[in-house]
Length: 493
Image (tube, helix red, strand yellow):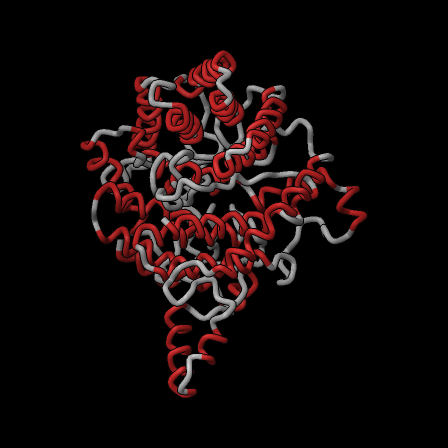
């Protein structure tokens, strides 16, 4: 044990040059530093003008509220970006039905716009897009993000809002039929979020939240939860880790830690109150498993991509602190132990230092996804520092294209943007759904299941990341717009 720990401490970080290759040096002063500077300037000048000038473009005003200027900056983007998105959708892959990269994600976007505006046209657009998705289901996967579960769940909800009860029930029936493969003892389905049982559980909990608790019977949810628990217990015994980590999971023979394919995403789902895991199971199986992940923390506060990886490299939602953070905040809510919140705050420091990623502006492994972690911390702590940090990450994304990030398929080349659209479409994973769907799961009432990946208090706006070929150029800015718009609403309540 001591030898393993010393090895981890020795290999805590990559070289500084490697870090610089993966992320930009954060150019923003932190909130406390900015306030100290402004007070000093005000004292030297004898007038507030210098300090006021220095903070004129800051997202938060003197009272810690979102400033009017920042709000206007955000809102000015939305209509234009929606128009650009619609134009790009004209050449999108007609067969991609998924929530992750296809039509269902777009349907979900319009469903969220409908929640904000109550404009019937947005609900109709959601219906149009989810119908496209439902025509292309292939039966290969069951999850909300990447399988049939997403279109069926969103279809049920959209039809429910339109009072098309027959169509809504038809979607629900088909969604529930997918449990056969999830529960089959002969199934090779994994347990992780993107392609596995946890992703199917999300679909069930989503419709229960959106339509009502009677939409999915508790017995079905309990069976899926039990299947996930039994799978984790079995692997833990096989790996002889039952005492240290009672619930262990793997994907493609690798024991991942992060939110997309790993332990953090699965534990997060099992910690959901609506999953109705018993208190004994929470205490005896989940809590020690969460603590096992905690103890894999690097000295920097970051987390490995997998249990076998000793290199501190990735600061993404899918791999690293940005995804683990949400599990920790949920653990804090469930177990009422401050150690989880302290560890989540350490994740926040890692993200602030290393979260402006050269890989892009996306959600799964980009800056926008990292920014959402600050929202979650803000609502867990009410510390304005995290709201400020989230706004600064959103501001970075609003300046899309000016930082020299890696852009898929050279989108500023008109020739390749048009000729190579299919590949660009596939690269939308970089601005993708994993975090956003979990935000829908964990944040906003009306589309949330609980309060982790982002704050639950705000019922006013959620963005469901959309995907299309040419939208690769615009969507990260749109995500930042929506993220910042969410700040505006959540801060005002």
